[in-house]
Structure formats: structure tokens, C-alpha cells
Image (cartoon, rainbow over all chains, first blue to last red; front, side, top):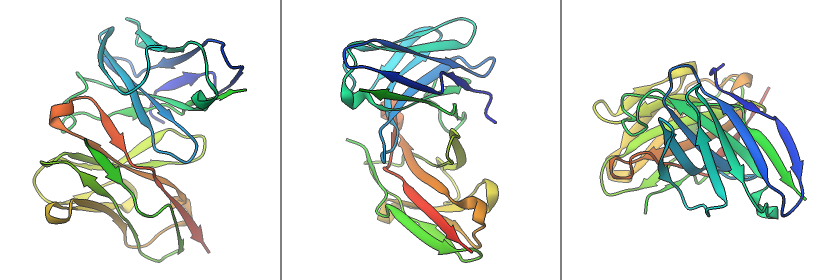
Length: 117
Length: 114
């Protein structure tokens, strides 16, 4: 039990729609990272937020966006859904600034499985 | 660019047998190295990590990993596997000059037979 929760657990959308996924970090964790895990693949880094500001981004288009709130919750928004967006979306929280990985640990949530039809 | 390779897509071992999962990385210097385990319906759980010092790292659940700079490897081992170890295992790398990005391998699926 990592203390990181995600909602919903499963979601079905159609191509072109928009989706919002939610994550609740451990209390006190200032950093949240989002990952996309396609079937049979490892997680791919989407972006990271530190104290409500984007703090790094992977190779994902701008239709992937996020928000982080002061209450340690965060959102991943995906616009204009494509079939290839079908995946497990993971969030991970950590205490510090998300760069000193020798001193801190990411705690992952169970994920939201998104299916785009 | 940084990359992580897990050559074994799937491994089957008998309960009580030893286990070694392979991981190779591509990076010019010593990165931060991690092993995570993912069980169905569960998030990724950190087993162990290496960033400097002793190249043999002990983790949770009886796992250990050895960093070998000359081979750019960070293989995960367990002397005696339990049925509950059946899961997906991911090796990951984070590098000082990419700050906050984790790079994950494609994973190794472990099946444990009685």
C-alpha cells in the first residue's frame, strides 16, 4: 500500500473524446509524475509536476496536459483521444523535487486503465 | 539517449530455485538504477535502487542486485523463489542530467511453477 490512489480504475472512451484521470498523492509529497504503460511495455514518462508547475516532460504531444493542486491531488488530461492512447496510466508521487533519486523514492498508484474505441 | 534493455520477456522458474533477471542500460556515466515489481492490479513497488557505493544492493522480499559498470548491467537476483514472486519486473534508470525522467525497460514476466 503506497498511499497513492487513482480514479477511475477503468475507463472506456471513443476516439476524439477528452478524458481526465485523477491521482491523489501521499500527503506532503510535492512532486507527481505521470506515466503511460501500453500493453506489454514498460511505463513511459509523460510529465512531472512540482509544486503545481510542470517540471519536465517526456516525448508526448501537447494534447497531454496536467494540473497539480495544493491538496496533493493532480489530474492528467488527454484531448482528442486516439486509439493508441489505450494504456494503463500511472501516477507516482515523491517528497522532494523529483531529481535527487538517491535520496527519495517514487510511490506509484495502481493506475487507470483507459480503453479508446 | 538513455535506454534500458531487459532481454528476457518471460522467465519460468520452479519454486525454490534461484532467479536472475537481466538488465542492461545505455548511459555514459553511472545512472541511478532501480528495480520495480508490478503485480496485477497493483502499482509499481520499488524493490531496490543503486546510485553509488557498494555494487551489491539488498532490497525487499529477499532480492538483491549487482551493478557491473564494465557490463552496463544491473541484474536482479533471488536465491530461492516463492510462488508469490510471480509478477512483472521492471528495471529503470534515472540520470543526473535528465533530472526527473525515469526510463523503464519493457519488463520481464516471471512465472513460478510448483
